[in-house]
Length: 507
Image (cartoon, rainbow, N blue to C red; front, side, top):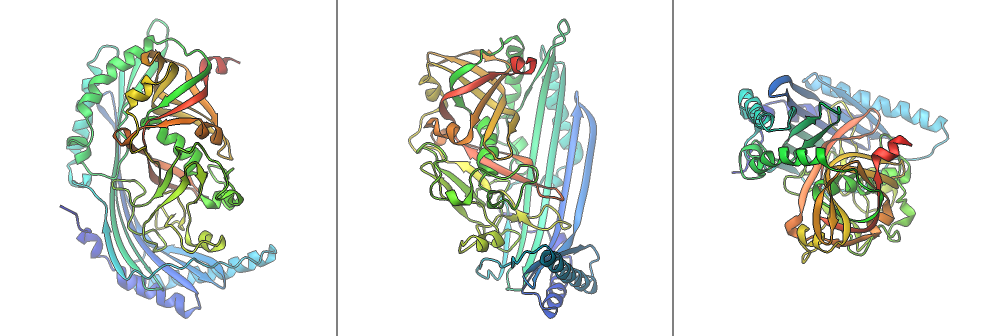
């Protein structure tokens, strides 16, 4: 049964605050103003060897007013829940715009902020797709399940330590603007994770194996229902870790590479997701992840990868971490092409960047992680589409004579143009004559973005597709954090450079 927005949120003075703030902004001459009220509750649990090591439960509550006045941005936020206070916040936002205009003029810039048009949506309500709000589940039950799973892993031979964690978020957001759009939204998301560690007392060597279950826009049912096979994964981890501890070091060289969705999502995030944020491609943004090699002049021209490569930006994917009904500029959620048949055909946009670059409309990528932060252009759910008639993962492996199969994400590195990268994983297997031939250690695959995606020789079918993702994508200054999902099938890449990281470290 679909959920409704919490009555405790609706009972807050949302409309009186918005009306007071927007009326004040209009009276002071703002060309545009929007009001955003947020209540974001986040809770976490951390266990070490089946014992609680820490927990937190925090709520961020407040509101913000953003204006365009005289062609310049202004922003201010507050926590006093009275109409008078909201009007004063709007006044501060306009004052900030006037001050910014002086600074911009002194710097010799004549840029004038205008926003791409967006239909007026009236009053809308949207709630994400989930079953059981994790905040309705007793803390003892949540910690108890993690402890039970940790104890099960600890009881297995070769497992010396187990780390477990659970992150949960319940987000409410109210938005209103001077055009007449009013939205009320509610999202729930969570991320459970367990890591088993093995230590060889004689050599001092150690390694780990982590669950592959991705963070999701779901509720407590993710841990207790049929969404993910936790029983199977927990049962397999000790044996996989033991095999990894005995595994030989990889032989560096050029291999065909089969990448599981549990690993490929992160490569998509770093080499496509960030690279197709248009503010980065234009050079307006460089914090955390640099700019982009996929510059705006290459739209419709850049050969991003093989003709099998079709990538979408999507704010509508069910259970996606970046899925919303409306973004933080009142833009309705959409799905669109970023790469079609291997060619760059789109970017991720907010309303200012869309207008600046000639797009008729934003595709809804404005987001702020708290009421105290201004919305910035943030990543949608960026996903590689499967081949409708594509092979299974087993058949992809079966097509390889000499290769590597990589599963699960681990460490990564990419340059500030999203161009030259390397990734490791939870585990990797040799492929010999179409069969898996044991795990190898100390591996990383290295590539240059268009060359790597250009080497994609086969894309798995829908049966291999998994929606991965992360809670902690960083951007902007002051820094903001956003959760984002990336779906993908398994895929085969030809002639990929495989590094031996132990040899690289020793150089």
